[in-house]
Amino acid sequence: MYIPTYFREDDRETLLAFMRAHSFATVVSTINGTPFATHLPISVELRGETVFLTGHVSKANEHVRAFSPESTALSLIIFSGPHAYVSPSAYEVRESVPTWNYIAVHALGVLQTVRFADTPHAMEAMLDAMIAQYDPAYGNQWHSLPEKFRDGMMRGVVGFEMPVQQLEGKYKLSQNRSAHDQAAVQAMLDASDDASARAIAQAMQSRHA
Image (cartoon, rainbow, N blue to C red; front, side):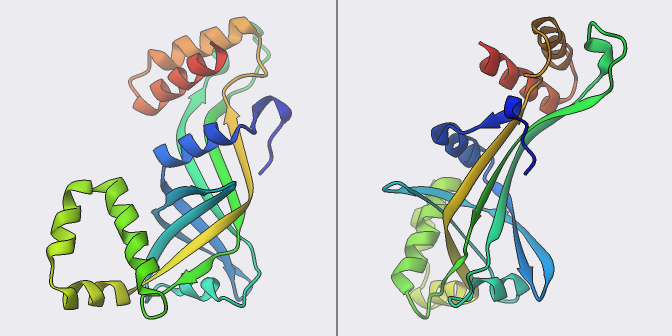
C-alpha cells in the first residue's frame, strides 16, 4: 500500500483496535495467476508477539485452493474504515484540489488450512471465538444443537488462520495540511449528514488532539 510518511501508522495496538472494530474484511489471494477476493468477518488474535487472523469460507468457495498447506504464497487481508470526500473549499489556498480522507489497514501472510476432519478441536475453537465476538447470546444455542447437525455445519466450511508477516496502516486524515486547513476540514466533515464523514471528523479530532 502506498503510504506517505504523513499518513503512516505503525503502532500495533492502534492497528489491532482498528481491525477489531472494522473486522468485516476483504481477503485477497492469487489463484492460478489471477487475484481472487472474498469478503468475510475476521477474528483478530494476539498469540505471544504474533498477530493471527482467522476465518472460514464455504467448501464451495474457490478461495480454499489458496489454503493449501504446501503453499507459500502471500495473501492480503484488507480492513477498511470510514472515508470521506474532502472539498478544497475548506483550504486557505484557493489553488488546491479535492482529495479523500480514509483509514485502512493491510495484513500480509500465508493462509493455513483448518478443517474439521483434520483438527476438530481447532475448528470448534475458531467458531466459538467468532460466536463470542459477534453473537455471544447465540453461544448456548449453538452448543445445545444436536452434535450431528453441528458436525455437518463444521464439515461444510473450511477455516484458515494467517500469522501476520507484515502489518501496515494508513490514516489519511489531512496531516499534510496546515493547522488551519485541518481544523476547517474537520469542521466541514463534522457538519455533514453522512455518518462516515462524521466518523472521519472524530478520527481527525482524536489524531490531532
